Amino acid sequence: MLLTYWRELYLIKYFVEPSDEAALEAVSKAFADCPRQQLVRDPNHCSECIKAEQYLTSLDRSDVALADIGDRLGFDCFSMITDEGFRHFVPALCRIALQERPAGIGHLLLRLDRAHTIIVEPHQREAIVEFLDYIKVMRYIDWNHEIGHLTQIRNRFTQQPESA
Ligand SMILES: [Zn+2]
Picture 1 (cartoon, rainbow, N blue to C red):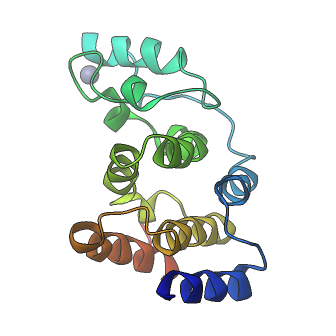
Picture 2: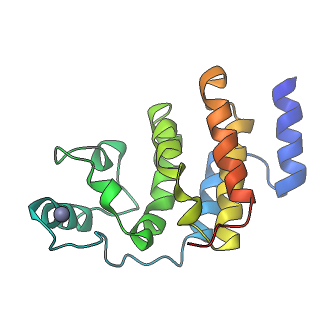
């Protein structure tokens, strides 16, 4: 009953029947124009940066999995990614969130936590809000523990980005 209510609100707001495919399609479209550029901020800074640059360059956003962007190198190389690199991988983070629930969703929220200063294009911010609304509507999260965090992140993307 409640689920139906939320699904209907979603439908009215986004003109699309909620489905994983439609949710991912919307994100992919919004971030289609984010080419892979330099991935690590200072690739020659130290041996970890060199390793991270090589490793991240080997990843493809169309098929990367949660294990690939964890600490496979012994450190969190994904956290060293540039803003452009992060935006490039957003569709992958969203796909992983749906494919590898619930860990993938926890991971997406972790990565999006500070990303409201990285994702600044209005249509991309809207796509993030829409995707988080979708996760909420589908109740893909641990309602007691994660809904507050998700809502907090979502609402940051509805406000104007703070100037850097
Ligand atoms: Zn370094």
